[in-house]
Image (cartoon, rainbow, N blue to C red; front, side):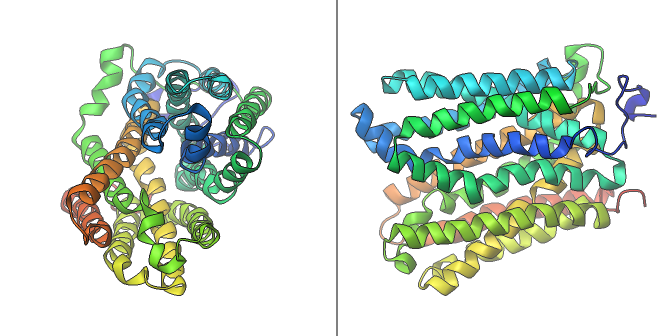
Length: 409
């Protein structure tokens, strides 16, 4: 029996091994890797984009901002509109749209056309991640759902280890267009893999759009999404400007900064896996509170850790683990509210994630512009305060008993 008492489509059963049929979860994770690379690599290619298109770095920065804002706005809308569609179809549409968006980005002759291409790419990305996560959660047995979600999210965190550094290197060594050509090709490959490996999956869905939107008004959903917004905003207050924050440790050397970012990415992959397994064993809320506690401590200590490479490396390692460990329990909490509305609910979490990225960058920029000489050192502690609000909100609402026990207990 599936959630909501609805039988799945033929050939699909919740609780069936999600790694069957040619390795479904790895395929979904590779798609997430491509989208994660596309999301975060832009910061590394902005100098080349600005120089080639004859614009300033500040103007070129809209390439990243427009992507994040488009993702944040469209993720819940597209999740609701496509909730009744078969999952493989949705994933294929999103991956092919992603490929076309990157193709258009590579061919854009002006900043305006590049921004338009990034909007199209972000819309496809906003459709893919929630659909892939909902598919993984539906195919996995309840006691393994956290790990299944972590595999897909692992693709996102892996992009910070391999995809972003390689894409940045390719842009510097060849051209920024080459990075987008590579991503377009990867999107086509992932679409082919999904078509071959993924069985048909139909999630139990409400009969109409209004009914499908109803779970979004659930208090548990609102609290979970607000928590994501808070800790993402807190983290990106400092992470957006991490090069400047860690300048005392790196001496402004790009190689040293790349090494620290590599540490962050590697430990982020570990944090995603750890968060998924711990969620299956201990429950979503305890894991989330532990991860947020670690994140707050890292951000508070950042002004001291930035003085040397050893301290900075340790801070980035703990930051990577704790930040990425928050995602599996958050997705698990939302999926557990109503599996049939998984695409919508998980898209709300994606929306909050990208809204937090945009808001953290904006607020951090305002602090640097108007905060005086000490603003750079204050980014971490202020971000810690914002993330702490998310932890306090989670702890306060956990008294209801929702998701505080291990799955199946």
